[in-house]
Length: 376
Figure (tube, rainbow, N blue to C red):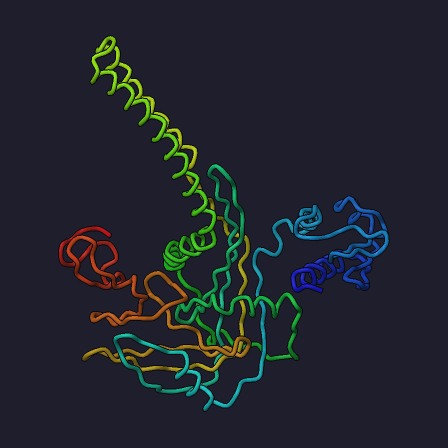
């Protein structure tokens, strides 16, 4: 069974059981359920239901896939439930000495050095936000993005967010565990900080998913503009040729030129309106995962300045959280340290000013270049 079909079957079975149905998983890749009366009405389904989730269906089974109407039917059972979810996970941690090797493989600073200060067992909170986006131009695209980050220091965990989600969806329930106390966990972020993070982090991730769609839209726009330009250029050249040969009414030809120019500009404006892109992004679900980690404290040194930063080694991904980008919360790429407050950023966070060329930290000066005052 494919991973997506398996997850969809497990989700459907769990949801139907929660609603009071008797459910049995059968092969190949199917389930049978006996539905109570209220559930039959909500799902518009018979009392005895058989669903198939793979390409080959068992006898008398209805096909259930992400493209079928069963996704919409099941969503009726959720309404506003499931918008927020908290999951406590437990895992065995390796010896603390393992952190030395993990840090050496994962932590790279382009313009600073660091020293390992301490390693300890701790608990952390990962926030995973699922957004649904809709992009409308001459065509329409819909999709989902997942933005996950550690509430300790803001490290974006794009690299292993799917692994954390998989542990939930596949029902990996650990042994009975004592939940950590509130003081052992990172605190909630204030609403203004969370809003600032989402404003900087989400658009980049949406653009990444829409890159193919945007490239295709740009190609179609360029093609239509080229055809339009070619057509009106031909009209323009014919009129100029007639004027040059002094054939016919020159005033009439000039009027024809002016009319063609205005029509061309109107057609260009129509094309720009046709290919105008509108993107709507809505928060669909918020997941919080609480799990044990190895907390690694580093001392970062840049010239005469230094600061400490804690990174978590995750037992599910077996990776260290990436160094945070305190400017755009990017997950990928190298990190730079600024000279002022020693902020950690991606190269874009310390890029040269577009006007004067001076490099500066966008966290220290988020609105204007400190040298020329131009807005970025």
